[in-house]
Image 1 (cartoon, rainbow, N blue to C red):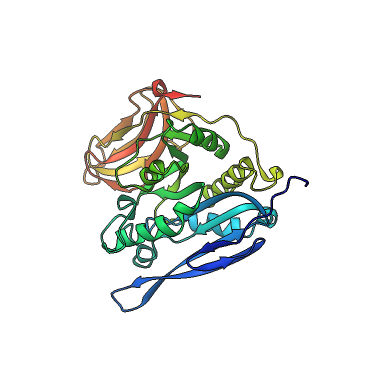
Image 2: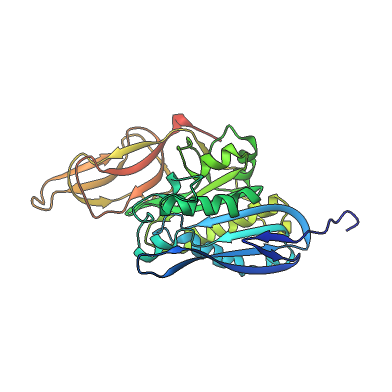
Length: 324
């Protein structure tokens, strides 16, 4: 303990948090059209000992819910009792979307609005608030997501592998790694410009809670915090070296009808393996098989009961485009 460095008080939203304290701030953000003031809860765990500053955002898309429970379980975990550094969590980064059960905030995607504007529209103001009050104060970040509506994502981390620090963090996370291009005005693009390593965790689907995805997410967060020496290493759980997927393709519906999924989302797929059938509800003797175009792995699949011709059914990683 001779080299122990004591943390300094931390200021967020004009409030001062002393070392060794946990504090929740209800940031008064904006008027809803109902004239109700919207508040964004921010939780700060400020360790006695100095260390990295790490933020975790969830529900940037208002109908993606698994991240809320990941953060809830993390808050209750005893690993945080001896935290080094500072952990900032925002379980509901888009309260407007959550209330309306929609992905967006007033018709706009916050994840296409960074770094935002103090005087812009609602999504832009939210992005600006997160950028200025939280993200710029931190050394690392994690953005928790689920798949879209009727689209189940296997647990995965999305990064730009050109940032070496990100690869180390992603491998500590212990789930499949998608080398994903950065989109314009996304949170990931904004943090890249600031040289802040950001992991994007995807698991499950919108508007649904999946306990397995939540447990994987929680353990993955603990692995990363332990890897950064923010918590005791005993909370880390070693996993096999994750696979990198460098290119994904969509397998689309060859016809419209009732989607009968046959293949679980995990496990290796062989070329021409039958993944699903599409049944014509008006001609029960007519069904079309959906086959894998090549060997590979399913990283996401549609859970929609009815599909139209051309709808995306499986997000697929060909073997030829993956590395260990």
